[in-house]
Image 1 (cartoon, one colour):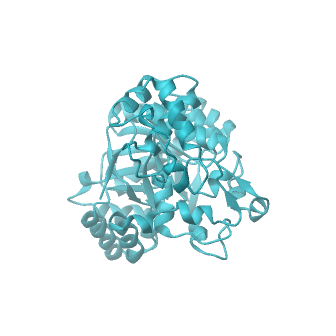
Image 2 (cartoon, rainbow, N blue to C red):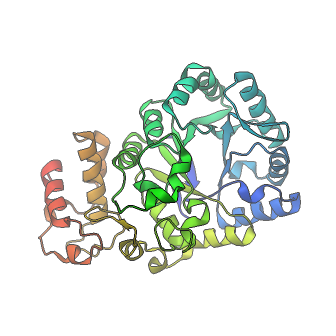
Length: 382
């Protein structure tokens, strides 16, 4: 298992994490079996968005004796009321729900306190002004949580959170179809078939800005909906017009700037083991570039997907990394110190490009690679 820094939180998370759907409705024995498989496979990050009390109690019991081996992404503002899930901004309910969560999980802390499901700017303002954010800060000051997070499907809200300087972790929906859709408060539009009837070209600029901002500011992203609820894996349901594989979807999410982990929504032990097996999958099984280039409803013409098809460079340049740092700097309008430092430590730089054109011949998306290398050399001075 590969591990990544979760932004600037100091937390180290497995790049394959676990969504909680697979635990819900399962007896304790099956929950324990899945936690055993996670531990054996090196999966250490679990998202806990559901307030289902049986789930919380079963997981807490399964974590006995090994709690500190796991990073828990616990949610604020999600409670169990009248036998069902409810999202709330009522501070008394938020506090009661979080206390119940810790008690049932048999722990006195959670590594990430995730403010749950903020998809409009008005709701973001409510969270900031209505006491929820202050409560999250309180929990962090007490050591009850280590980092403040926020979950959203709306890049406009997520950008506001990332730029706030308060939110350290974003839980965000990332996949190649959602990335083409503009910001909106109605999450249903992300999988509305009508939005994929017209030709779609290149990532939505606000989503691109979000990922680059998170990379630059050190806000860690934990990914949800990497498979579009399973639709992307099904040829009949995929809004891309063609099925992708689980490993292609995982690899796409994990190659976006700022991303630390994908919360894989495994519904059973077999699906969990399949997600873990991504770590051992050969490069050709992870490769999404050829599949994306052939999608009938989507095109990424001229847009670098960080897929690595341009390699190998005869001069040893890591073209994808150079391009990523170039894009980070161009999006900012100057060269942030952290970006300059990361570029500087690359073993080879854009200035070493000999314009042989081998990279451009291999690129499935028609990216002007040589031009990007020369721009990087001019911008960074090497």
